[in-house]
Amino acid sequence: MSGLFGKKEKRYSEPIRWRRELKLGPGYLLLTLWILFTFILLGWVLLASFSTTKEIFSNKLLDSGFHFENYVKAWVNSNVSTIFFNSLFYSFVSCTLLIVICAPAAYALSRFDFVCNKLIQTGLVASMGVPVVMIVLPLFALVAGLNILNNVTANMATLIFLYIGINVPYTTIFLTTFFANLSRAFEEAAAIDGCPPVKTFWLIMLPMAQPGIVTVTIFNFINIWNEYFISLIFGNSDRVRPVAVGLYSMINSMKYTGDWAGMFAAVVIVFLPTFILYIFLSEKIIAGVTGGGVKG
Image (cartoon, rainbow, N blue to C red):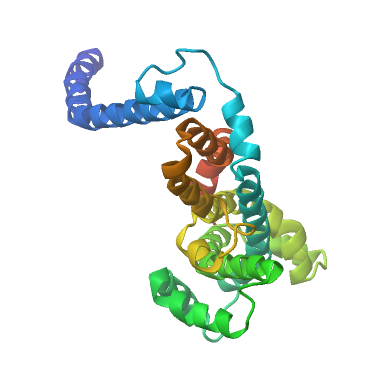
């Protein structure tokens, strides 16, 4: 009897499985088409960056071979090196300071009950829904009143300050959720050993939150690297502009220079940091989003 029921169960489970697969078929098809479209598009841009402008417009990419000088011209002559290192500086400094500021705040919000705890969390979540365009004009009036728009160092410091301020709510809420999922057993064991709360945070809980910190840092890095509107308003000098505004200026200059091959080379250079982050840290991103330690 058990063998008979086992055969029936197996016989009936296969049509159910195939039915489920058929239902997922349209989703798989759309995902496959999107992946193909993305790879074709990125592949065309990569090939165009090694071709000449004439080959790009005649749709005969790499007809005369690889032109690595496009990257040299883009890096040296088109000011790509300046905007690249500007964005790298903004991203690294902002992401580091965001963790230094938001990680202790998130830990306190997730672990300690105090007056206005829920109010602070609600305020952070609500501030994430405020459009940047609503605060740009008051901020610009404030910065202009300080007479620092023509100072390169002050301009760069202003951009970093704004990048940090805009990303504090998201970073804090993300890390608050992550710290809340970490077991309290580690803190209890540290307290028994006589470790104070501050030392417990820096030596035990912060290293345990590494997947969440890496994930939110990658998201912040990409957001700051691709940010355009704030840098367009406050980065009013070629010496302080990041990659987004710099590429836009390059596209406008194409009307006069016509060096489209150099522009595609610049696009590939600017695209590389975020691409490398996704390639080498994709597992940490998934772990940071889905993980969080043992609940306790």
